[in-house]
Length: 355
Ligand code: CP3
Image (cartoon, rainbow, N blue to C red; front, side):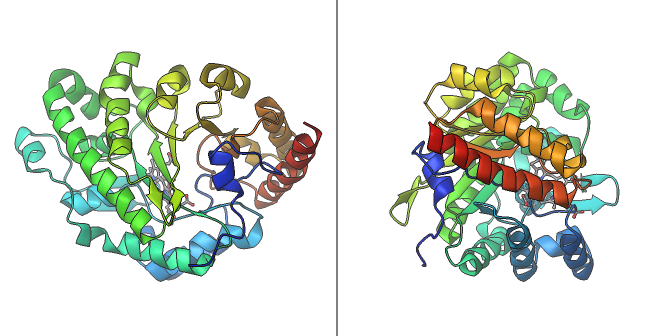
């Protein structure tokens, strides 16, 4: 395997000094890039794209061709895992993901099991091929959904604002939800470990819906199972630590608990004040975030100003990875992305050389 030409992300996640703040963007391969839309059209659908390791490599590299990013992320989806459990994933135009077989009744929950690794072989093929194509340019991030966030889609059967079926189960039959979460924790740990074996050098757990829980329910139904995933992960590969990032959208109230969960970095959404986050977490873990993705809808100059504001709020101390506070919007302006990437490189270099 080629040595890493740029390990800035790994050093920042280990809270070591770096010459500048490393940067990548959640959902950096996606519909805001015309070249992504062309490849997706060639594939025929998002699912066909996701199931073609060759095209996954192509779209994972597209944002790196345009921008000086410090990481690549495997092109796949968090819903590949429940799909491999037999739930039947589909994407409907304008509506988002939908499962043909949601898990709601007692018998359906009892039948649920972690997937056969063979059914996720296409994901691992994409990881291996992407790592090979990167040839050591930047580290490769593998990922999964948190057990709770996967359960939201599995019980509801589709995307939702407030996940009423999931919430009903949580309060009426918590035993059923706990059983789903146990299976998910195993499935997610297996999937992440397999990605590391296939070449992923950093891992990220997306808890996109953890923020829809009460404080007590967040601990019991979300964080407890993310912790279980972290305990089951092989944390070293190729003689290096494999750092893990935990992102919870709407997790601002629980930063201390997230930082103590066994992760190496906490991903902040755009509503969190980075100064407040650092005060509360201290130097226990690295922080990732947290530009409002909507800033990329503005012209380049305004987006640049917002990026600088975020850098200043995190300050020059080691242990910051620049990112958005949530996934990039299909409406993001590619020129504004370029301005943000440039600003993070140049301004953070200045900040760090003066500190
Ligand atoms: O560059 C990358 O990060 C690509 C890999 C990636 C995708 N999805 C590809 C994708 C990653 C890391 C994800 C994570 C993901 N998927 C999350 C967690 C992060 C977040 O944004 O909160 C969630 C909740 C999903 C589930 C999902 N996938 C939804 C709800 C949707 C439809 C909504 C939408 O944005 O269209 C998807 C589809 C999806 N996954 C797309 C991409 C590029 C768009 C599909 C398309 O091309 O039509």
